[in-house]
Image (cartoon, rainbow, N blue to C red; front, side):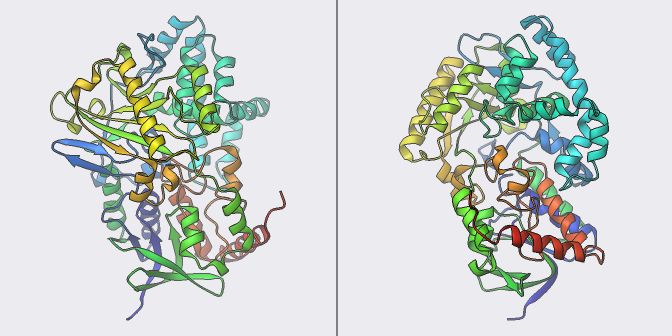
Length: 535
């Protein structure tokens, strides 16, 4: 069989892989994308059922709309449209909360609601929004477009200010629970911050959860919680069209079984069918870290210390249970502000969120869950027949309790929570599609143990420790091989940053002036990961 030859092979057509393919093809590279599934997108996917459109995994994408990476690809020219609900987020902590802690489309309106909760909280809200607007562009460039973020860092530091830098660093490390207490006197603003922090798996009492909550909150106030019109799959399809328009080839239904390595350099891939493709310049993997280092690469080409760190330390994010419903009518929330909202943070107030996270950390299925609830026909009316609703709910299970019994227990508790918060909702249910952690991993192996972020987003597995101790970013200990998935910085979310960083590193390494840097980077990575850790 004749071996095909291309400049770069991208393993996996998740959204990061498609971003990487488009950027490489833009530079004139001959790019081939190989995807095991029959459709592109990975965890950016939808299904249609009798007039309803149900997102299979991710659904609302504030990061996607705000990301400088995705914006630069002009996806609207390739068929992407965005839809918005009247309001992005409402937090409903209990059945006694008849109003809900709402974020409205304009910061001034949200501030007015928070001012009603406690005098002064509205002004604090507007100040946070103003600070975010001042930092937004260099901050997102630093987070999503470069590793290490050398180029955008000076602008970001100037805008923060030298005298304010120590306080900003402290702000970035605050737990969400502490941030809410320090900034606001009422409860509603703190609930909004903490609820948004729970889009990651960082406990509300852990360092870094406040920064994540602030970023998600400001994104919601800046761009809303939008979703692609017609279903999340439309984003993946637009990315495919964009990559193909640049000259990349995308093949689905082709599983890569092995990354080929010779002399310490990735030379191509071999598929499950025995097909070989040689890569002149690079192989980029849009896969999980365990899949790349434990399955696609021969064990002897990976440093022993890297294997040891992955086996002992790598931690998936919390297992996800996702429930999807077709409803004949929207949810009849007690809290009026939850009606007409894209996403409802439901079931726990701020002290309850701390208790919920503690239960998960202790290995117990919480009796009273916290859940994110997406009302997708409220965002995009075409997701359901007239008057209907396409609803999803997701919550988490403990890492060591995701068996069938735990799934059933969490399902029952979640539906009981909806009974309290939206009595009579069951009368509108046509059917339910349940996705357990095992179901999620079976459908998309990158969602290991039902985690949806490529690994925990806690600080101990971020930056130079993502996915394990190294130089951070897309660099691997194999020359010409780049990991460009949520397993690397900046981690989970539909933003394209991981694929972009991998593609840009591959392009730099291929240039004459980048080759010495590439050799030095690979060598340093191998030395860092040569021996197992002593602590």
